[in-house]
Image 1 (cartoon, rainbow, N blue to C red):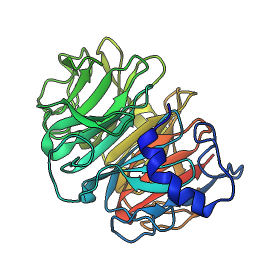
Image 2: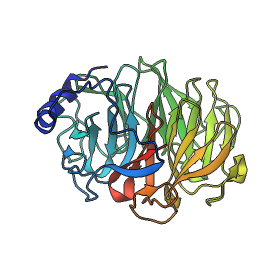
Image 3: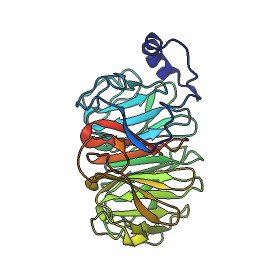
Image 4: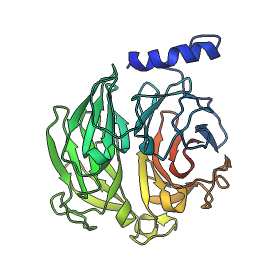
Amino acid sequence: MKRPFILFLTSAFFFSACSKKSDTATQPIGPIVNTPTVTTFAGSGKAGAADGTKAQAEFNFPTGIGISSDGFIFVADKQNNLVRVISPQGVVNSLNHTTSPGFSNGKDSLSFNFPAGVCADASGNVFVADQSNGAVREINTSGVATTFATGLSSPVGTAADAGGNIYVASSGLSIIFKITSKGVKSILAGTGVRGANDGAGSVASFNQPQALAVDASGNVYVADKGNNLIRKILPDGTVSTIAGSGTAGAANGTGTSASFDGPAGIAVDASGNLFVGDSDNNLIRKITPAGVVSTYAGSGAKGSENGALTTATFNSPQGVAVDQYGRVFVADTGNSLIRMINP
């Protein structure tokens, strides 16, 4: 899906820095590296709101991250009240132009109040969990924003399925909502009372769910932060716990023998592997379709070191996203960076 508003933002900067035109719909973001490594993909490491090249750009407490089918990366830059976009050529721009909190739609006047999560649907529309406004905002491919849904109580995570449905994690209500492409809102799972019960959607419970991912079969995965669990919701709303003991920890293992500490981001790849931003452990974890949990990247120490997967460091990583090449992008929240993990 071509994005005229983003191409306009990036074209002047890009063509002044590169000698030939690239195909924005097909060119991968950055080089493909065959050695498993962690690199800094965007951000200077200084908290701020500057746009520009990947090395010049600044973020401030980025929490959510999503990738569209045409190769653009979207970042919910929470403390800046901005939604940022990184083009396939590596140029960072802001989709709105004020860091002051607000609740305005449109294009030039667009504003947010603590945007926490972001995703893109198959048509290229971007959906933003606007946490302090209790709403989900939609930005179409022309850059015009509307209010997609309200009454969500601290929405922090969003995900889209192939049918155009949007799923929202309401941290305030501990409920997972489903919103159709027509804007019809329903409760997929959760009672509104904090807990960790599995079962039918109407009796299952969560504790401050933070992030969502949807696989090709329509299953929804939940980073259930307050419970230190990873949950799965079938299309009929049935909830199960697929990983985590419920006790804070960093143990690897299968299913409930593993442990997490503040899981705040989740993504699923084409093979059904899950990647989790295990925020309080400063780790990125991987869960196979068989439920085997391992540490994918990070030493557990707090820092911003790049390099081998086992020695690299993060600082409260939250949002994660996976591209078609299997590369994992991380909103490294405490470092105000976007990191990339090459498989």
